Amino acid sequence: MTGWDRFADSFFNARVMAQYLPKIIEGFWLTVVLALCIIAAGLALGLLLALLRAFGIRPLNWLIIFVVDLFRALPPLVIIVLLFFGLPNAGVELSGFVSAWLALTLVLMAFSEEIFWAGITSVPKGQWEAARSTGLGFVQTLTNVVLPQALRITIPPLTNRTIAITKGTALASVVAVPDILGAANAGVSFSFNPSPLTLGAIAYLVLFLPVVVLGRWIETRFAWKR
Amino acid sequence: MDMFLETFFNWQIIEEAWPILWQGLQATLLLSLLVVPLGIAGGIMIAVLSTFHAPWVKWPLCVYVDTFRALPPLVLLIFIFAGLPFVGIDVGPWGAVAIGFFLNTGAYYGEILRAGIESVPRGQLEAARSTGLTRGQTMAHVVLPQAVRNVLPDLISNTLEVVKLTSIASVVALPELLFQARQAQSVTYNATPIMAAAVVYFILLWPVVRVLSRLENRQLAGRR
Image 1 (cartoon, rainbow over the protein chains, first blue to last red):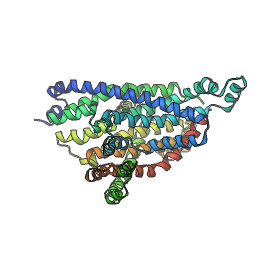
Image 2 (image 1 turned 120 degrees about the vertical axis):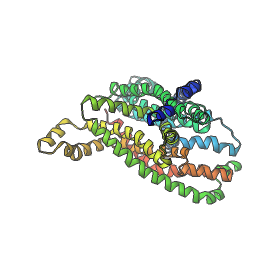
Image 3 (image 1 turned 90 degrees about the vertical axis):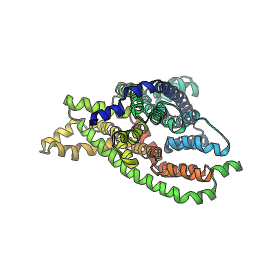
Image 4 (image 1 turned 180 degrees about the vertical axis):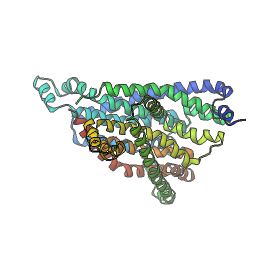
């Protein structure tokens, strides 16, 4: 066998690929579901924390800042491992899917709170004062005047961060979730051929390449013109 | 509560596991010192190349950057570590991590530095060239220093992500902090070593997060 044949046989083996394609597709949808669950919960919690922080209750804010810092400083894989392999020692068993979802949700919550908060503080004080002087309450001002302006400025960094954290779903394969990477790994060990990994890589590109390009477009579209 | 403390904050276990964790911490630091400069070097290469406007440079570069930004780093790492040996290329865990991180983080650093270079006014470049500096000298002495300053928060943020990302090296059995903690856990049947690893990461990276949070707030608030 020539070098090229060996390469093609290893990474683009049609027989092996055909055999494991259904598993990879199942993994693909699992990755999509996991990613959507993380995005929904993570962004909602992040926004909630940022809004709570706007009330300016000192002890509560310190707690929020600490939690945010904590999940920005810890590597996501460490959190996943702690939840999945650590909690059972205390008698709490979480499935791999739940461990990965919870860990990445907390991470996205932390990063998005930081971004939402920066957006809220970027709205000039005059906007607050003007809105309050027209008779709007604090909550009304926050949700109807400040938040719409804040959200616009947060869109580019939020998109990039969300994409980066969502890519972390591949970490779920470490805790035995049959997502794209998990299915590909299983395929490699059964067939003793790395073609399923090629398929897996292609699946990730199909999933994330459009998102990355979209993120690039959003970045220029919503860029704040100075 | 007692059971919780015993499982996650067991001092006796920390004393037993500390030598193993210490080795892991050293490997994590060494790994960071290896992959951060590698990524920055790759990033500078990409950013400088992206200043060339010829289509045969621009498009392949765009494809390269987007591909490695779209591919999860763990997928890349496993591909190199577990896939390439099938065609006779076995680079071992350290080699796999070095190559994977170079490709992945290089793309990210490249994007950040490119944005930095674009933020330097064109007049700077023209002025430098007109004083007789060559293209390379202008890049190294005039454009890059200003570019780096303009995107410093993003550079620090990315470096923080890279250091955190070294934990995925545990998947290819490189004995860094998380891997060693898992080893210690499986010997002691107690989650304290993993908790200890988490605490070490936090102590190590918290100051960086604090500084970064300040810088980012200032940057975003300054947009208006």
